[in-house]
Length: 290
Length: 160
Image 1 (tube, one colour):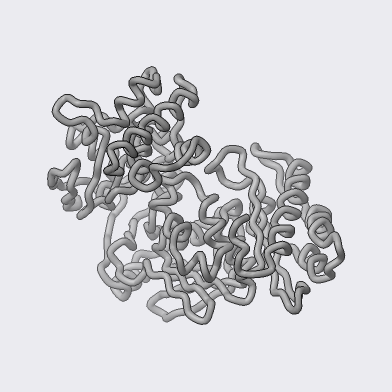
Image 2 (cartoon, rainbow over the protein chains, first blue to last red; image 1 turned 45 degrees about the vertical axis):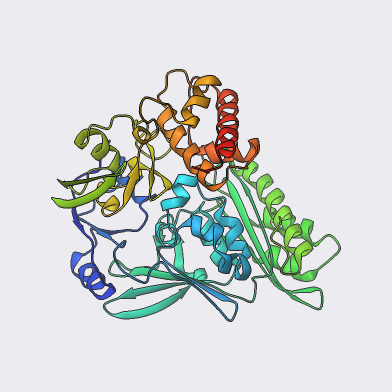
């Protein structure tokens, strides 16, 4: 099908964008790369009054790496995340996860800001943000605020972003950046994850001091698994398998057309074990060959 | 209505379009470039793949206004003076198409691959083409065709 009618505007500056957003009300949507919005428009699942295109707003496509922290503008594409040297050096987990997003043509246009604002519970960026203690930066006429990834994702397609706010950038923290693992089961290359797991650890003297285990595709939002994180910190000789079992046993995953709850439990075990092994094996900056 | 000015296959086009016009419909209905095929219209099948500023995109998931000021290449840009492009020639020789519905999208995806990673092997070819669905040939002949196409592109040494 074709998109329904809407009013289109392409503001040229951030203040102009924020003004339009504050006046447009709940029925307006923001267009970033359009790789989630356009299917919804074509299928008539969305019928917004206004489509507000971010493409002309300057400054939303930068990638800044300072003090090991990487700040990525909302309009940065998945493809740039896959190929940018700053991302590869400072947030290699993000570079790895980017390659799992859709197909090449989707990655060429789809953006990180669009993905987190859309908040599909099976998407990659939300669990990367959770695993790296990241945050989502929001702007509105009322000012700026930064929301921790933990607090941002509320439910299916639902986030802490208010209707008059726009996602301007994501920040990926530095503490968890260098011991990481990522593993995803997709039925076909480019599909959304049936289950995907991101693991990141802070290492001190060769031991896991802190861990993050974030899982997509199992609930109405991306989830962290404290039980699996504790198993990694406990650090037994079989820590990866312990974490995998803890994740499997503590999460009651959803059932849908792509997999039953019991199938997803098996996937949670397998993907958590793989991601955890990769993170533990890595234990250093040369970990991006997984 | 929105003003639109976009270079298509090297020629500047300008139009007033309803903002909801998809790039695929702009190409087909406004410009008569029906080589770009429309299959699923929600980003799955890849038949509508074109290049925007050299990068493959789904023209059904791109509003025409999003291409304003940019450069679009469609399958019509490939052959010149009645000569098939080496990628088209390879698809012909390797039996890489039957009904041809998916072929324009495949050719444009391969054009991007030839420009960005012409030395890649069969696994990478398959990965790159994962977003292009073919319902009749099966993928072996297509991958054969792409291998042959990349070989001839490398032999020509111009990477395009």
